[in-house]
Image (cartoon, rainbow over all chains, first blue to last red; front, side):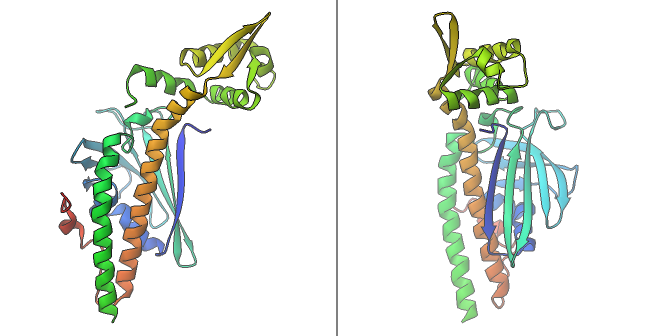
Length: 152
Length: 131
């Protein structure tokens, strides 16, 4: 059991450039991560991600290698600079596979940061996200319908 | 909800690599003495005893005296609690990645279809439209 990190992978039927925009464009990040995202994909810059129900988290952008690597640190003590001993590091790695993208997510630093402080831990987030998922599913259907109609 | 001092202690206990290794060995073996555990790790018996004390304080292992031996075993329920907070975060990432997938695939399909651009255009209209 590794209690320091979470590792996940997903294959997406879209090229890395498209996936890159979804994970680095704040307007799109606010569609899958939080209610409002305010940051720039520039190394060393600070930004915030906020949820209506439970406030905002600061983040610092770490590595930006379009369209292969995007990482940031969050969940660090207010007023301090994040480093490898006081924050969680979120890393997205994108690999092209026959026109699709293998997206790998690693969130690490749980040996230093309590997992129950991480965005995504609390039960109320789960409740919040159920509503959100439903809305998103409708949006996806809507856009897909329009794409189909346009293709006709 | 899992909060407060009790959980801090739990996380401190499982956050140290040697202690995690001890837990792994104990899970494999069922139970063992500090001496037997020290034989499987590159640390002294004293160091093992200290780590076991931390794990025992956090409620992750229990000890039982058998004659002259003190045998340690994992307390599985408590381990589950430690894994639980992490599991919630992991499950949330699964949902986030599913959403990333859907957004990217719809955007990509949109780009390929005539006259449909699905880039960041939906960002404003999405704002809290659900609630």
